[in-house]
Every structure is written in C-alpha cells, then in structure tokens.
Image (cartoon, rainbow over all chains, first blue to last red; front, side, top):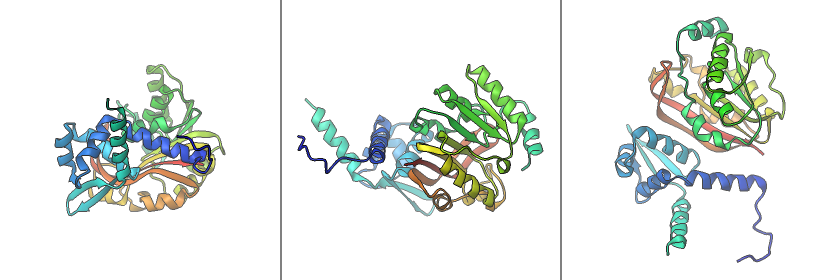
Length: 102
Length: 199
C-alpha cells in the first residue's frame, strides 16, 4: 500500500479537517440521513419518515451536515430540501461497508 | 440591554434560557481541544457548566452579576467549578492566544463592538483553538420567538466570515430551527451557526 512517498502527507490543519469529517460521519443516524437523500433531495419531513427519528433530532444532524458542506440545503418557497453536496461521503461509507463485509 | 435590565431578567426564579447547554454547543463541544474555555455573554451559565463537566477550565463572562451568581450555583449543583467575570464586553480585553475554545451563543452586540470582540476572539484563540457561535440572523425578526428587535444586533454568516477572517470555518450555516431554551427562546428561529478553528 505505502509508496513511501511523502507527496500525500497532510498538514496538521488538514488532518484535523479530515478527522472532523470522519467524526461527523461516525454516527449511524447521520449515515441514515445520507442514505435517505442520496437519490434525490428531500424535505425534512420526508427524511424524518425515512430514518424514523424525531424532527428535532433530524434537524440537529441536518444542520451539522449542511454546515460542514456534506449536504446542500435548498429552499423552494416554504419548503426546504436537503440533498448530497459531497457524494464522496456516501461512497466512503459504501467502501468501508464493502471492506468490512465477510 | 444594560446590566440592570439583565439583572432584573435573571433575578426571576428558574433559568431564563434553561439549564441545559445550547444544542449546537453540546453537539460540537467535543471539537474543543483540551484547555481553557472562555464563554462570552454567558448569562446563567448553562454552556459554561456543561463545558466544565467535559473537563475544561471555564471562564464565564457576563455583564450581569445576578446571572453569574446563578451560574456558580448551577456549577456547584453539578459538582464543578467555573470562574466568573462580571464585565461589559466593551470594557474587557480577551487575553491573547490563551483559549482552547471561545463560545458565544446569542451574544447580540452593537456592530462596532461585535467587530472588535470578534477580532479579539481570533487573536484570543490558541493555535488549534475553536470558536463556537450561534446567533439569530436578521431573518429572526419575522419569527418573534426570541432575540433582540434591532436588526443591527443580528448577524449573517457573511458578516461573520468577514469579522472572523483568520479562522477556518469548519461548520458554517444559516438555517431555521426550533430553538427551545427556557422561556427566553421559544420556537422556530432563524440562526447562524459556526465552528471555526485557528490554524
């Protein structure tokens, strides 16, 4: 795996950012939310139904995911839609799952 | 509002904004590295006490001595200690490069003072230290569920990016959420939330 090259070494700040990204993804409810919106953008109430949690809890996670640039928040009149902004997040989850599967 | 008004507000029984920490602060508090934390406009101590329980040495600032006395009592009831400083932010200099975390929830200051405080926040953080802020945006005026009625006391994400230049914004968004905190914040509100780190 290791090439011994140092081209890809991240700075301390970059490492912190990557670590934060992993911490944000390291929560099953947030991953459920990503699964719920990966096909197309959905409203908060659609996401609440899809993941089976309270609206307050889902809203809290949506704010963090949108704030970190993993989800995009779009307003259409009174409705707010959340969709994937960083598809890499979901790919990463699938990759980890595939790797862990027996 | 002046100290007398806040003292009156906090003189009532109970905690005006509740005893539980602000939800955004609670969510991102683990991003604060080990070390001292400064809470601005901390009122009755709900965030300061929570952060002290996470192991930080916490200094809570507020212009209301009545609020801070309640903050110390809340800390004692939770088995932790916090330092309190009763001061108007206009008369206070944030110690430079001293803080692993600085926290401000719903600290709505006059714009000139807010800009100065935010400059001092950037300088006050240690390298790697983080600033956590949640505040009402001007869109909050339409909701009437808490916060000041003067638009100039409210802030946008764009304001914050400019005022906090030098910090890296890790989480940053304007959103509408249900802000239920004691009797003071009581419903759907328009807020800005940020988590920003000093390199």
